[in-house]
Image 1 (cartoon, rainbow, N blue to C red):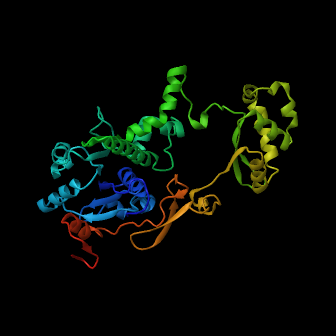
Image 2: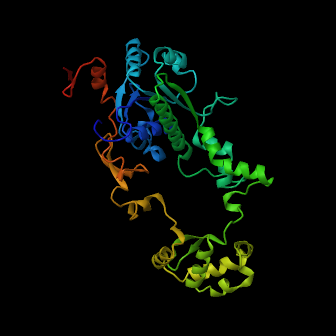
Length: 389
C-alpha cells in the first residue's frame, strides 16, 4: 500500500473490531492510505457470517485491510500482538470495558508497554452512568429521541441505515487524525480516545434539544412538523411516479408560479411573504399537486433543474445503481470480496486533488496476511510462497 500518494501513507493501524462502528473507522483510515491490520480470532470475525440485512457488513466495512489470525488465549499470540502494537501508530477496538484486560490488552497495560500508541475504543456510551451498558444503533436511536423524531412518539421509527455506527467510525477517524496531528508537534505520547454510540446520536438530535430549550415548545416529529417553506412536499406525477419539491427562496417562488400555471399566486397580495404562504399551505398545496400531476416525471425533473429548484425522485437504494450521477466516472468504485467476486460501492465521499478514493480495494480472506505480518515483525522479507526469506 505504499506509494499511493494518500495522506496517511506510512501510518500503521492495528484493528480488533467487529460489526460496523469500529470497522468503519478502520475502513476510512485504510482508504486514506493507512496500513490497517485486522486481528481476528481463529474462527474469524463473526460479522463474516452474517446474512440478510447484515450480508454487506463485513465486505463493506473491511475493504482494504490485511487480516491476521491470533489466538489471544495463547501466551505466544498475546506476545505477537504486543510486538505488532509496538510497530503501530493506532490501535482500534470496540469490546465491552474489561474484556481486553483479560487478554493482557487493558488500558493500563497498553499505556505501560506502548505509551506512543493512539488507542481508540468504540463503545456504547462515553464515561458516565451508562458506560457499562452495551448498545446497538437502534437502541441509541430510541434513547436519544431520534426514532421519535423520524417517526412519532407513538410510532418511533429508526433511520433506514446504520447511521450512528457509521458516524461513530467517522468520529473515531476525526479524533485519530487530531492525535496524529498533535504528534507532528513533537509529542511522543499517544492518546486514549473513547467514542460513544449514544453520544453520536445525541449529536444528531442536538438541534431539537436546543430548539426546545430556546422556545419552550416540544419539537414536532418529521411527519408532524411545522413547515418552514410554502412548498416542501412529495407530489404525484402524470405517470404515477412521485417527486419531492422544495421551493425555498423568493426567486424560486416567483419562477415556480410563473412556469407551473400559478401566476395568480405570485400576484396575490395575501401571499406576499414566505410566512403568508406558509399560513396558506392548505390553499396552495392542493392546487400545486393538481398542476404537478399534469407533468411526466422526466419533463418535470428537466423543468425544475432548469429553474434551479430543489427536487428529487423518491428512490430506493437499488435505484442508485442506475443513477447517472452515481455512475459518473469515480462515483462507484469496484472492489473484490473475500470470495473473489467483484462488487460496487460508492467512493469515499471526498475528492483528493480531484481524485476519487477507494477503487480496487480487496476484502481480506481470513488470516491471509498472518505469515507475512509475522515475518515482518521478525525482520524478515516475506516470500508469498509461504516461506520467510
